[in-house]
Image (cartoon, rainbow over all chains, first blue to last red; front, top):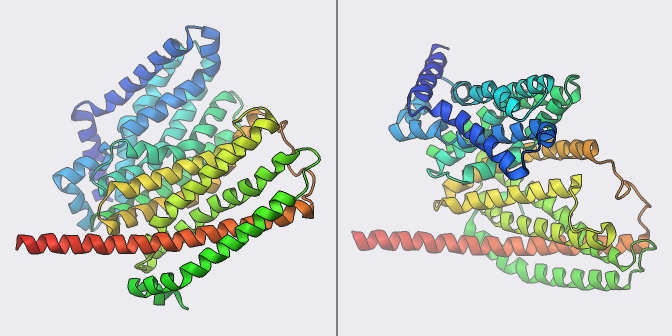
Length: 218
Length: 243
């Protein structure tokens, strides 16, 4: 347990200190949001209506782009080999690393989303609903993305391949995230299914990623 | 013949050399029969002659799903049993599956043009087949990223199995999404039961396309084994030149 906590704290520190990795994701989110009115026109009624969908799309892209650092630094400086040889179960280590990654890159997206929702002229209820669904749904994106990150580090080159592999798997999260945000204030089945997707991917992601790391680096 | 006997690549090459002419002949016969039955089948009272597109479209859509199943079983073979030919199977099946999925999409949109008045609608079925096509392309891209076949095989096996677990979830989500946004108005689920005059050619065509898949798969596996031998010989030669 202490090993997992140590990995979590170490990853959080590294993500916060090195190159401002955490805030770059939020900055990218903002940049995507700035593009939307330029593409669709400054029609506030339209922006208000599609606001939750646009925020979800931006958060999906921002969390995908942050993924390639998840194992790459550890693979480059050799600490991944130590983790693989260590006594802590690899699945739980991956879970801890994913949790640290979400705290450093996913949570900032959730925190800035009300601000961006304000710029899209969304109602306070829709704003809160979108932030809540993002808080519940972005962990699922991270846990699914762990598989892609493990694949790209096992292949020693990822680049554009990672998002291409992860995007099809992220489609259910996007569908139910947007539906739950649009269905506010009464959360029905979509919100429950979104929670289920997060829990499911929290199991599937670490197991698949750990298998990839074991098989890919032997 | 037990599966383990084919684990030896040389034995598989012998089997392929013996089986391929028969498979090719059976495929040609099934296609001849299927095409003749399709050509002589009566037109549908609503769809007219366009119903004949279905004789190509439906088998391709079936194979699109069958090939991912084959790849998943091969992925288990790679990871669990370490069967030497499992990753050869998976690698050769991926482009074939992508081709069948692409054909299903193209024939579907050609059928949709006269029937629905548009080449593409964001219908639940079309969308989930499109996602399947994307996943096939992702697996193929993964295969092409790594030179070492064994490493690429294990990575692709994991991705294929993750995809197999996720495909029903994606299908369910897309169905749910579509019924939310757009009630089924364009076409009826269920519809009239299929008449035997249409069902027989459809079944024969499905058999023909499945035989085509098996033939192409065995031929592609033979080529892949030979390609790997050439690769190994070249590596040995380069090492010998160095020493």
